[in-house]
Every structure is written in C-alpha cells, then in structure tokens.
Amino acid sequence: MTIIEDLKNALGPDAVLTGAEIGDRYVSDASLTGRVPPVAVIRPRSVEDVSAALRICNAHGQTVIPQGGMTGLAGGANPRGGEVAISLERLAGVEEIDSAAGTMTVRAGTILETAQRAAEDAGFLLPIDLGARGSCQIGGNLSTNAGGIRVIRHGVTRDNVLGLEAVLADGTVLSMLNKMTKNNTGYDLRQFFIGAEGTLGIITRAVLKLKPLPAGRSTALVALESYEAVVAFLQKAQRELGALSAYEAMWQSFVRFSSEAEGVKLFDAEYPFLVIIEEDGDGSDAARERFEGFLGAALEEGLIVDALIAQSEKEARNFWTVREAIAMDRLLPSLINLDVSLPTGEIGRFAEACEAVLLARFPGAHVSFYGHIGDSNVHIAVSVANASEGDLHAVDELVYDLVQKFRGSISAEHGIGTLKRSYLGCSRSPEELDVMRRIKHTLDPKGILNPGKVI
Image 1: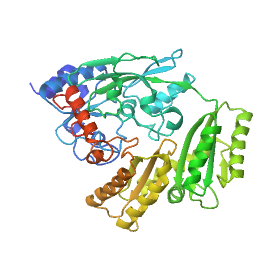
Image 2 (image 1 turned 45 degrees about the vertical axis):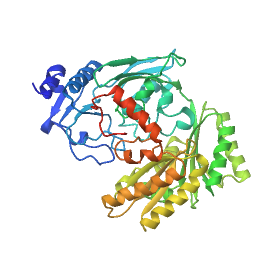
Image 3 (image 1 turned 135 degrees about the vertical axis):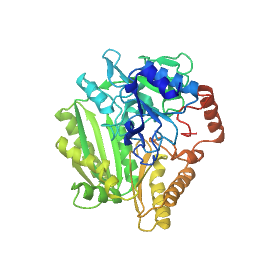
C-alpha cells in the first residue's frame, strides 16, 4: 500500500489532495519564491488527524511541509520537491474564551483577524496584531514568532502564549494547554515550537493571553528632523504616556513613495522622518487632552516640528495606509522586503550605511526604510529594475553583512525559512547552531519536518 493510500484510509479521501486537486496556493508563500507543488496536500480537521498523518509519514520516511496562511516572506512554507504539505486551514476556530483567566483557546488554522474579533466581542483585546491579519493564521504566527505593530506594549507572539498543543514527527501529541501565568515546573517545552517554523513539531492549538479592550485610542502623525529626535521622542513617550501602544517610524523616501502610491495627502512639506504614535486610553476627553498636551510639550521642546492628530478612525486609517504601503508590492519591480533588528540607537547609522552600500552597487535602485523602532525592528524595501537572481542575492549579502557588523539580527519577525538560512551565522554563533541541530535531531530523528528550513 502506498503512503497516499495509507493517508486516505486514515483521514478520509477528502482530506488528501493530489495531482490537479492541488492549487497554486500550496506552492509558495508571499515571497513568491516557491516553484514546485507538494506531492500531496493533507487537510486535517483535528489534532488526531495531524497525529495520524505524521505517524504515517514518519513510518514511510516521508518529508512534510507544514503550511498556514502562506503570508510568510522567508520561504518557510515552500515545498522544495517531493514533500507532503500539511495545511492547517481546516483546523480552525476559537474553542473557548475564559473571562476569569483572561485567555483564549484557539486552533492553529484560525485566521488572526477572526480571533481578534472574537476577543473584541467578549470585551477583550488579543494583543497579537500585524498587517496580514486578514489572511495569516495563528499557527503560523506562533511558528514564526511574529512581531507586528503592538510589540512595544504587548511583546512578540511568544510573550502572549500561555499554553500550546503540538504534534511531534512520530505522531506524539504534546498537550501543554496551560492557562496560568505562573507555572514553573521544569523545562518550558512550548518555547521549543514557537519560532521553530514547523521544524520540531506542528502546532495545533494554543492558549493566548487576552488584555482588557481599550475604550479609546489616540493617534497622531508627527514630523521630526533627525533620527536622534526619533529616539528622543520615543523615550519621552515611554516616560510620559501610560499606554503607548504603537510607534512607527518612516524615512522620507518611504513616505514620499507610499503616500503618492496610495493617494494619501499628509503634511504640506516634506520632513526627514514621520512617526505614527498611538496611545490606548479610556476614551475620555481628559485622556485626549493629556495626549494633545504631550504633543504640545514635544513641539515646544523642539523634539518634533509638526503634528497631525487623527480626529476620526478614517484619519487614523490614512496614516496607517501609508505605513502599510500595500501598493509597493504592486508598483516596485523585484521588490525585496528585508526585516532586520538592531539596537534602537544604531538604526539611524545603519540605515545611512545600508542605503550608501546598496546605491553604490545598484545606482538608481529604490531603497527606503520604515519600522517599529521601539522594539528595535526596521524594514528595508529594495527594488532593482530588471534584477537577476544574482542581484537579489547581492542585496541580501550586502545588507546582512552590515547587520553582522552592527551586531544585529538578520530576522526580526519574518523567520528564517530558506531565504535567510545561509545567513543565520551572521546572527547566531557556531555553538548555538550546534545545539539547534541537536534539538532537531532529538525531536525529529528522521528529519521529516520541514527539511532544509532554518538550519
């Protein structure tokens, strides 16, 4: 009996797609670097299905690619040839909201925005938030330890996970669905799977922290003359705003391109830096007045040179439309979105050096910077007209070499996948990589889980 027959017998024929049934969606993540479809796609409906599928694949020595919403940018969910994909798209739904514990138990295939809305309906905030909220899945968020726009207040994804359920390569189910903040009982096994990109096990369920739902939110767009001012204004906001929830910096070249592409008018003049700043509050007039007073004081001190305070949700959305820059993917040829992390105080110098080295190698290229800053993350948009495969690799090498010199991380929130694997040594020591390989071999001795990814 073939492995496909075994899988269909165990899971049902409708749970296993083959041949023409496999659509393009299973070929590549959002990096668009995938080229070959998997030999089959398994679509489990339960953790028992995932366990049975992995047990069968492990027995056959069949390699497996876990797939979620396919919004990643590092090639982590891409087949390389000959693998079976396990898509978690049908293993979806919010199972429970525990108001007393302040937790949500959710299946891995649940769309992030669906989970966010369920939390809001129950009077809570799910702190995990990123631009791909409408299509990314909770399991993928956990597997890549996604960051996003609320990290400065609520932390990265792993900081919002209390419990986890995962299935090992041999089908063993590890149920660690803890709801307690304090649980100091030996090794914290859930952390093995968060950020591991499916190389150690497949996440099937999670218990997530919930926070009180803010009654209101104040949003402003401010203009600054230097990166030093961006950092000084951030420090002031951290000292004086009780609930700073977002701090997004954009360099002039990024603002110019994105605002024109999106058709959004911001300031009349151009400034070297713009920052979106948000504070969660109680929605009262007093809270808004305090926010306005904070901005007024920053203007008087010369930290900022101009400010627009959103008077409506639509105005705030306009600020974020420029920051999310969706039109960039459509308008810039061969766009490379790089995601790195550096000490906050060094990001300005890094950006200057990075732009110089890229333009020296590719005169006329589009190079722009934007990022969360408050959590040390900066994104780099690079577009080289008529770029060859060699040009794309050259961009990576130039940027990651600089990241290493600045003692930063080659991946702040997008993971390693295949696209960053060869550069992992820029941020991790040989000793660390050796321990990673030992853990991988222990949990997946046959090497069937997402082979060739991360390490």
